[in-house]
Image (cartoon, rainbow, N blue to C red):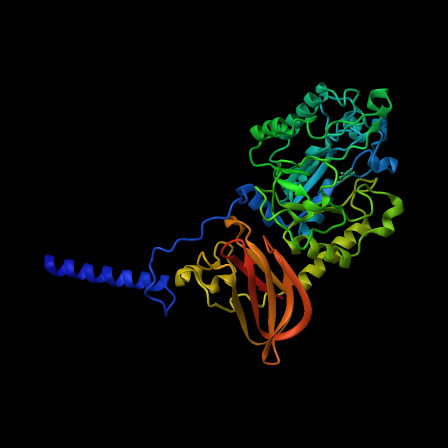
Length: 496
Ligand code: FUL
């Protein structure tokens, strides 16, 4: 081939390649749009990488286990003898194995509850497991729990109660140093910790080293959280902090297993602090104009109490109740933190195990086959008419793709076509929250009797929204985003 000919050949080839690329990018009919259309700009605030990881966990487990397990109490006074802590056949592998099997991603352990007893041999206290009969004082339950979590592929988290009814110096500055020293131990000796639970509870009275009195602290200032958080972050930068006010995740405002149907991951934390009166409602909804990304975590116990009590063995939530809780937590865009308290033996009780397994069975049954996967999805509004933003990404089963519209659109719909009548009962929607939470209201319709029939209306979507509708046979569904803070960005739709 001569030089000129070969140049021509390459030019032609390159032109062809460009046409193919441009063709791949544009959806058929509107070939004339500019190729410069960019993804939508984020609507701030947006989740951090660690928060994003937390959203994807969906179900985590809380383990309340301590001296209260042996005294049949919910809140120990702080004067309990360490000798009382004596589980007979404790096995953290049993906990981890069951949690893994039933779909949980993290184990968060109460390393010290309000009574002050430490489940690890802290060198800063005598009120610890080292003065208990467990393993003749040689045991370290934080170590065992973190090792079992690792073995079964679970993340590990810790709860360390700021309120300490055992310590003589609770309420003074030296207690804050003590608390921080304990955090240093936890965050340097037990591997990666994904979540740190700062409990805002403070009931006032306690043993306090023998003072037996009522002590109230100023929840807004006493703990000096910014510096405590800084300290922990310097040891493990990716840890998510739970407290009423975050900054990683916020309390949901109740312990009943639900977040509000309108659930914004955004909230302004400037005026929030753990224990502040009357903030429950706000915590349950968040606010659309909040200046921080602090999603709500739904903490609830599988039993009436947080700790195990023999008298509650027959009050374990049923698999159906747990599934309802799943729908009002994960199904409303939050993460579920379900507490399963081991019994005096140091094992999950048989009734709790049966409930967890039953719950998992319901999940597997109800969400057995995603009928929307790879189904035809269409939308009139597509950002720049580009394939990169087309409706097909709603059903491609990928987390990193999405359907979105031009910037000036805040109301738009899309349709998912199953091609033949299909029985459905659940519609799952997910926003691409990496670009911010946007949707304010939407409706869902099904095609029935040759017309669109409304089956659900909703407000926020967020990380995930599961709509449970009356079972219906339909060949297609239509979702209309009625209102949105900015152009909607939807990453996933599933139908069961
Ligand atoms: C509350 C505590 O007072 C309960 O005992 C329990 O630990 C729960 C998760 O948080 O504030």
